[in-house]
Structures are given as C-alpha cells and as structure tokens.
Amino acid sequence: MTRLYRLATHLASATGFLTRLPIPARLQSDPPVGARAAWAYPLAATIAVFLPALILVLFIELGAGALLSALLAISTSLLVTGGLHEDGLADAADGLFGGQTREAALEIMKDSCTGAYGTLAIVVSVTLRATALAMLVPLGAKNAALLFIAAAAAGRTAMVCQWCASPPAKSDGVAVTLGRPAIRDALWAVALCIILVGLFRLSQVLLCLHSLPRSLWPRPVLASRFLSPAVLAVIQATPLGQPFRSVRPFSSSPLSFSPETRYPIRLDVRGRIGSACPPVVLDKGSD
Image 1 (cartoon, rainbow, N blue to C red):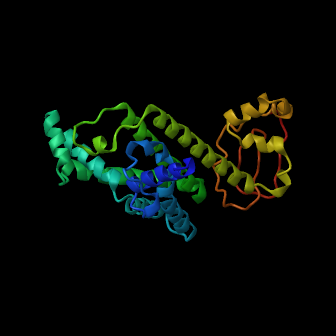
Image 2 (cartoon, rainbow, N blue to C red):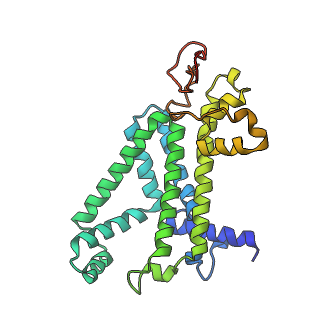
Image 3 (spheres, one colour):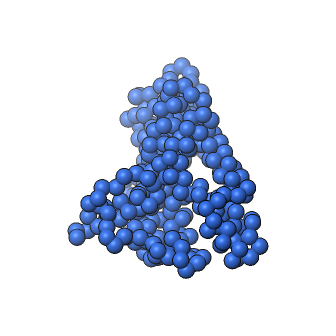
C-alpha cells in the first residue's frame, strides 16, 4: 500500500464516518481504519460542509433572506451528516440532565428514544447556528460560506482533541470499536485545521482585494494593510520587507463590506473602508 493510497483511505474513512456521502469500494479498508483516520477529520468536515456552503451562496444570490438561506444551509448539512452530531447532542443532553448517577446517565444515552432535554438541545443548537450564520451574511455571501466551512473544520478538530484526551465512557461503545486517536494524529488534525483556516482567511483577503478599484492593485504597500497582523509581521521581518515596516494593519476588519460590491470605495487615512462613493479619494492627514 503506497503512502498516498493510505492517506486517501484515511480520508475516505473519515468522510464515511462523519457523513452519508458514498465512498468508493476501493477506498474502504478492511479492517476499518478507525481512530487512525482522526487526522483527516478537519478535511472531511470541509468536504461535508462544501455543499451547504454552496446552498448558502446560491440562495443569497437569488435574493433570499439571510435567515432563510442560513436555515437551508444548516438543513443541508444535517442531510449530508445524517444528523450524526445532533443525535449525539440529544443523547448527551438527555443523559446529563436526566440521569442522577453515572450509570443512569449512560443508560439514558444508550436509549434510542429522544427525551425533552434532547429535543430542546437540538432546537436550540440549530437555531443558534442558523442565527449566527445569518449574522455573517452582511459580510458577503462568499465570506459567510468560507467562515461556515472554517467553523466546521474547527469543530471536528475539537472533537478529535477531546476524543484523544478522554477515555471511553463505557467498555462497549463506538469509541471502543474505533479506538483512541494517538497524540500524533490529534496534532496532525490541529495542524491541518490551522492550514485550512489560514487558506480560508487568505481567500477572504483576496475577495476583498478583488473588489478594490484596479488603480489600487499595483500598490503592494497599501494592499498589505489588508493582511492580518501576524502575516504582516512576518513580511516586515524579511530582508525584503523594508518598504512594509511603516505599515500598520487595519484597525477594523477589511471584511466589513460586501466583496460582491463592485462600486468604488473610500479609504480614509487609517485604512477603514467606507460606503460606496464616487472615485476613490485618499484623505490627507497623518496616519
């Protein structure tokens, strides 16, 4: 088995566990990979939320409201994952709030029926996620979709870390069947999550830069103000970063406007982006 094929098998195993997406038979391992595929959970989460993110952008572009689009995106994600996380949330809520002892809580969690606590937990969870996603839509549909995917990757990474740090609650559960991730796999999951979130952040910056007038594109020093403080600090530390050492990042997020807006924008002396206005004006004054 080549290394590339093994990595693909791990990714397929993680995707098959976290979603209901069909997995090619040639990528299904025997015996199952189990916890060894935990490193790929952030990437599997990205695959799982890609379609819901497209649904969000599509309905926003069609003129649907932010809350309706967010609810449709969340509903699509529930279909893709088969309600896996919601089922676990409901079981945990019923057991933790309904069981008086550890044994009673585990017995309630094992029951396939959902009680009042579990139902309320699902309702509250879906409502909060849809509302939070709808609040991101004013930043731009594409930005909201990227943040949606990044949150999914971060959430599955947190699941891997908790899975690695905590022993199974009982001796015959799914966690025992899958095994326990090694610390190395958990660290790889964290590293992969950081890389994915960084790529999503870079995509957001590029979307913002793309909405700027073309006359500003050749100005790397001005454009560098859109970078995060950490990235700008790295550039300033390099031998070629001398022109950038007097540049300070934006005091407010460059994502506070819609990247879909194709109108000229106004940049004040501190780099804040204002509302659409006639041709770009750089106000005079001290920075």
